[in-house]
Image 1: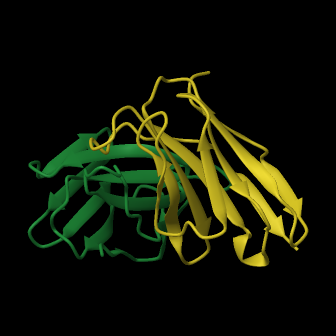
Image 2: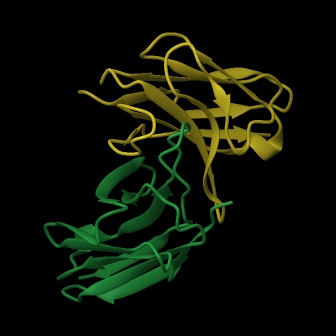
Length: 113
Length: 114
């Protein structure tokens, strides 16, 4: 059974800092991996999708990397802003008939002005 | 606006009562999902529907039933609510099963069972 761990559980940084969120998963046989953002009281918004054959994916100030063999992914946020404050969730997908995602518990990020 | 719509947004039930959570998407997606989110547990899959006319159990299906009414709508029913079902419920959809991308989530239903 796939298990996903996100470290740290919570992170508080001053505005402008670069930061890294970590995700590890136990089963390396994944189809892809996604990073989501969840704002308080809201649903999830997809940020980045990395296919299993890719090493990284970039969108604006966000960069996600994937090391499938070691079961790790990182989300790098450059020049953090207060608007980045949210919970970030990592979710490997198995691409099977379920099309299911297994979610980590998330990292709650707070960016202080 | 295109997306996934969940109703109601909030609900309080008494133990033993029943209710149906509604979900509708207008993106012509094939697959739809129901997740629950609990503090310290992350999101867990309750039921999913890979395509219209099919439904299957996820990780935590006990105490729930689902109906894929048509391609747009996927409802979740609690027949006899229990306090353990207090949670935030999210509906999601994707264009094609097996691709694992293009997920769109609803804004959630916050359910409290007393």
